[in-house]
Length: 595
Image (cartoon, rainbow, N blue to C red; front, side, top):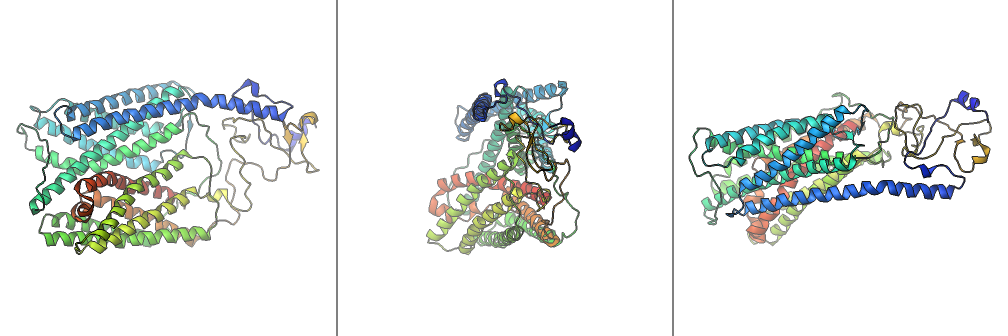
């Protein structure tokens, strides 16, 4: 066939070639071709897999060294003190700072623009992390101010740590804004170790902050029990042995614990974003040309934001009343605990109903799921399930305690209903979020849309800036007979170059959906549900983050499980519960963009 005829017909639609191995060239024997290609691909992936395993093991062991030091410090023994732990954390942050500096300088010197993962580190997540980072900087300032007042009897490590942490925070936020979307293709093995070091450094900072905050709440709980005469528990608090030289030491010390929740969330979010960057190292980005529906304005938003703001206002009221009444008599304390459970029952019940309505809407709008590879979305799903485990464990312990206890305080059965609804609400919300994230966009759906071609094998010539992909394949063109026309008849069987019918050309712009767009009322309902769930999750994060934790105060679980066991459960479950709520907010914002 004449080549000019093909050009007049429209040119080559898709061209692909292999760039990995010289031995993987075309052959008349397709079986040998396939075998050689598989062998070359395995050889190419071998160092990548080894680097992933080695860097992962390095990060885990660095993290476990820190955990061992943290547990030793929590014991309050004479050998390992807080200054040793802070010195170790400071060293980790300095190593990460050196790696980030090297990476930024290297990227600036490279002339070639790096590939980007559009799904990694969405703009609103980075904006939220920036706000949390600013509050973390205030916390560092309070630490420095506290050290100034007690500098005569405090180790220098306690002032070096907040200074380095502040520098680390500023540098890391800059790195996240400009480089977290990068898909690293050079110095891959070294970069894997650098990124995973950053991941586990932030993960350990989260773990250390969560344990410090839990210890603070536990000491407050012991103090209240001692004041009420229930138990004579020892409270271990290490205060400086000298007097403060300024009048602000007490203010700095007390304010630190109100900022801990923001610092904790900052580090866990950064750890998750950097983990996605680590997974993207060496990855081939598939260039899809479809575009999601842009987020609309406020049309149709009314009921969801209104109910969410009512829930948020009620939550703030419950938090204020609970905090004040827990310092009063036993009867007042019981009333405050009951108020918390009744408020939670109403809130969780409404959230569960909203999630069920959203799932029913999805059953009506039968759009297929998107099964394309997306490390960010996969991590979102895994973190939702992982963070739910802590709450589920805590809730089932409460269910067992309520059923087995012989006492019957006024909040016994509300506690049972609250625990069961908490399990149900998280299960429904997880389903709603995950299905929302995995549903195809409107641009990919519709009866008239072309079935997606595997982007790991081909790329469109129309998108000339796209990166070439592996494989030898040439999309076909329609001839008058509707058959497959080969440029070389002898090689038609091997499919080296083939021209076949093509009904819909691949275009670098969205395909208009052919009637699969859901009705406007369904979209409005989904948007209202999403906004309502966002505000409710913020409400449920505020309560435990700022001291409203009836699990410490109701005494039912402690009576059945014992003080030590129940404290261990809470120390495990509470940080995961706080993280779940903030992560759910971030995921629901992504859902809002899709709907």
